[in-house]
Image (cartoon, rainbow, N blue to C red; front, side):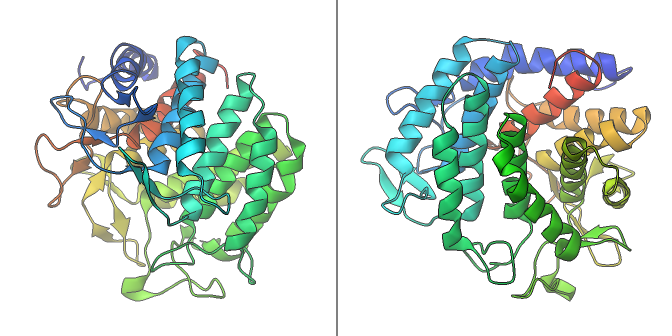
Length: 370
């Protein structure tokens, strides 16, 4: 396997082989703790699990990956694993108020009791995939959506825990989960999706500049200067989600907004390294040249919709550059900066991003359905 992919069809071949022959087999064995029916937080490059607490998002993201892989026809046996992980997650991560705890440390299952909005979103996403494989998870999801009232903010949207309570990121993943439930045939989620899109268009996105802001004050005014943040990867991700929402609504109204976000994201592609960087300043100059694997996956997904074939191929090559040189089925998580250490472990959470990009590519070249 090599990075010099000739075209998108060749890229699809490369990624499907990597996914089906390396990544899915690895994470269903070495990456899986059968005693606790849960996924390990990370694997080092010798395929040894990293000990310690396991975050809720690891379990739900991996559950989504394996349920989707089964649904798309790669291995029906992966569905049994996904369902076992969901049941274990339900039992071990639920707090008394019904929300999911941030992390659990086996053995003993001591909980880190924080309930992040971000983690609730991925619980909803995992259930949507299981629902689409013939399960009955809609009642759970509906009830959990109601529990989000604990995070509701009077100015609209939801508060997150931590030092940045007003942020776009968790809303982005709530929108992803809500759209997935719509696609699973549950039209009652439509209003929830619309409310997040409305908030994004009104507060998160500067439509004139084509810029997505990350952090805000209590009335959803973007933070300025060093407190502000502009991430190319999230520009790509929001562009992809707004396109997805537009398709469900059969409208082109917000497509120019999504296209502008994609164009801004491209300003964060380093012409020398040919990868999407970590963040930009308000003048759209590079703020943090360090990057991770996930912005490349979101660049690929957005380029397949809004870019040229050459741009999509460039994004595919960027992603390959993170997978090459790692142990089969793993990836290089970081590029540049102090975290870019040879042999550093691959966190399980990133498979969600890589899998999503591969599925989008295979769909674009006609290999898999949606």
